[in-house]
View 1 (cartoon, helix red, strand yellow):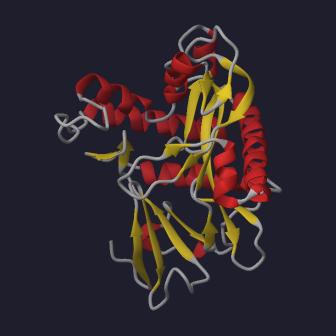
View 2 (cartoon, rainbow, N blue to C red):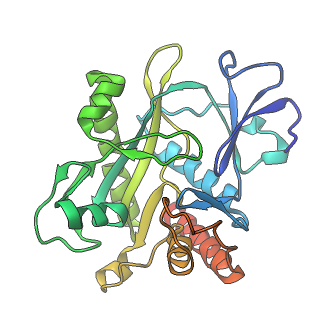
Length: 291
């Protein structure tokens, strides 16, 4: 996409990063992050996108950044200056020196954590009580970081001790403590709206001037988090998700999602019904949380 005054610097699975024309990532004082309607699952970008997804996720990120008072974040104060071409799905942010750690917090046992628990009785090296079932609430939220892979590669679950090796003990400890604090605050706010925040992931960077650890990227969106309907959960339905689990479930039933498979081929095109159901759940989550 052509945006006057900006040049595309990086394109990820679902977001694009622009710098002011004639500046670089190393020298600029502001960046433009644009959320697209693209949707990814199992490390693949799928077709078609989810209509309106970029605006929904950006609105939710902005709401959470504003709600999480006291947590430094990368937003600049001039969001009114977001170019008209991407208004509603773009954010102006300050550049950070990003840490190579994806900060995952799990309050419930689900997804890859459930699969690992069945094998190891632990998740990312964190031992858990015996006898837990899929979807159970954990006694306490746990921090299970991952090493951020290059585009097209798979993130690697790592131990806290490995994060110490990557970023040093003070930063590793701060990332863990901040992540758990944000999760607990967000989970309580979500539950007041009848929504369970089962797990989420954060990204942080260091302010280039002060060194302050700063919350970055998207935050607590349907793409970075697993949200469930609390009423449905209490009635025994642990599949009433507000994220892209609808997409994941359809792919798992219609495609070989094994990343090492040699015969899977490219992912199939998403049916219109799956696209619309996913968009509706994204919209409902935004309404439930922010109304």
